[in-house]
Length: 443
Image (tube, rainbow, N blue to C red; front, side, top):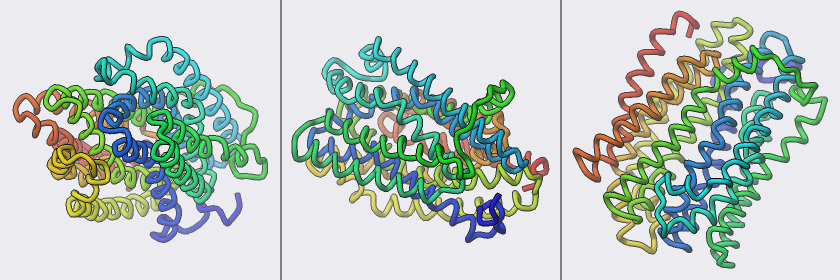
């Protein structure tokens, strides 16, 4: 491999940030797809439209769970193969991953359209919201195969030492989404159809343009003849099972949020939790991007048997995460009102509901960082079991349990506190597992 590749450079804070920062920024722009939709829809369509978007997104999480599983799991294995010098195997497996993943999601998408309305009702919709869900959701589900490629290529571009290209594509996608949202919804009054079309067109940039890289045979990673190796497919699925768990659990917990808010406050409560979860995800996206950006470096050095570099990467990642976590919680609390008013400038009742809720829920951001780092680090080390366990406890068992139990005891405040409590308990699990496996991996 070329000496100019990141894998051949010293493991320093500057080199690590140079590798991870583009992925962090990219993740923030990716999060803007749903957030911009939410902001524009909230202000131009109203809280009914915002509520519908939040009911649709659990459906999208389910269809995209496979993409995130293979995106992270296969990427860890590809990075390990590069570290072992098995470049041809890495290229072959990349190709197989794309073909397999796109095919499976296309089948899921076709099946979804047979029972779409029943699924929306199960996710918390009522008869009044159902037409809004169908209008927005069916376009977003239809674009899922291209969205899959975008998710996969986000990871593969980093491993291919092209993180800046991934950043540029994400910026372009985000900007296009914003411009088209304002035109379609704000100017031309196309409602939820316009919001969905704007997102779909942005997704096409991130999903289709990277094909120019992976069809180029001069690049480090490119498409090659796919070879089915059952052991590698199962290994990738195991590695990425935590990411699949996160998406499936997100579908369940978002539906629980919607159901609880609908029961306690009504449709406006669903709109409030929708906007708050959007805001929370902006902050969390930074941690996801940081961990995803460093993941290939961890996988490569694990494959190369370089425990000293793994130790350096982990030490830097832990310090960065703790400092950044504190800074982001402070920012969330300080800018609580201005951030919530972006969504609710025309609805004072919705604004006050959001301000009270976000002040509590923002506490979870501090603990999210260490949980995401721990899960992502074990994925990069090809230890899918531990990573999946952390993700399962964090995003499903603890969070779903809190959402079921706490509103019974505390009412509306129980909904707001459910996420912080589950993240705190998850952090205790993450820290204990990081300590337990420290000697095994040498970090």
